[in-house]
Length: 216
Length: 246
Image (tube, rainbow over all chains, first blue to last red; front, side):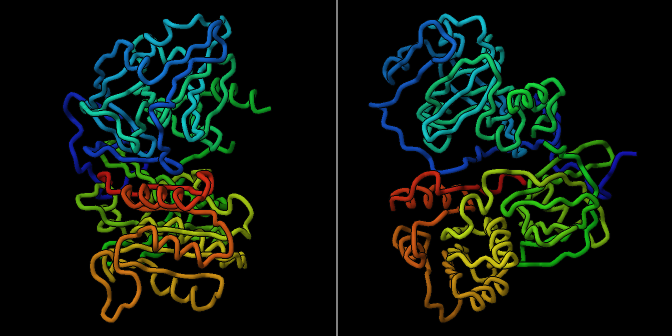
């Protein structure tokens, strides 16, 4: 018999074209969550790098990056702190476009996104390809603001939003799944909102095994 | 890591802190010691299978064993806070898992380092857990709480904070009222600004560890002002509270 809170009912209907992952609620706001101060980044010094297990590390200046082909993206996003936001409006550069510029070494299987301010987060390389991820430069038609991760933010909308690194500076391709900032602090190595993988102990056995093996 | 399984706790006390804020004391069958600043996830389940979750900071210190205190602000049209405020009585059961969070916790470095806590509204909750832990553990590091509230009726934990400040020369309580101050108030009556933060820091004998919690506007502004005072980024830890439909 599942636990029920007597007298509790949904206050807002969740029918419609969108679906909420388990435990989430819809918000119209765009909440801000970070662990420390918002870094102020000078665009004259900004760069984005692809490095690690690639034959040819690549780096773009702000102007070079903005000259790359850009697309519109309208994902639903899901934050581990329980809010979801539907139909967000972004413009940016697909990771598929960026990865065309490097020749990956065969062992490259995971990416660690690293950011101005020191933030890191890990994402399997397969989750960055085939239109699943982009570097967001504009939000709702305007340059992405610093509090939401501007000037450039990794967006991987099918995973909890902490994987979408604010102030992103580059991706390091790796052969092992190395935990980033929140993953070290006990959050999921993968973060699938539909499986409600919020914390490390929510991960599948296979993901837990890969976590523990690299922590040995 | 240990599994974060859901458990069913029992509400043993409900106290009104302010007209819109209540503290729920909940006995847990599988209580584990938390670190001050951590939170629990709370899950509500409807008879039709609908479930929703929210995170609430722990207000009690780890010295208070076997139970946790969660302080919850009633959010306008809040699905969970509304149910907790209006639908839950002593003796009722609630489903929880935790403790969660490994960064916005104190102590994080040397426990004797000076401590600057800056709160806006219900953002005081995790900072109160830090102050209660500091008191119960007998720590006497210099500490300041700068607490921004709009009106006198919004000062959560007021009596306890004032008693703590009166009993402990190493702890300074600074209140600032942004809208309406009490009659005869001689203290701060404005939003937290650079001068106020400089005065708060000046109460401390050295560069502090800073914990800032409140609405996004306050947290963004305070973190930026603390950076501008020369504090390193890794000495400024932030957590944001805001009505996000909760």
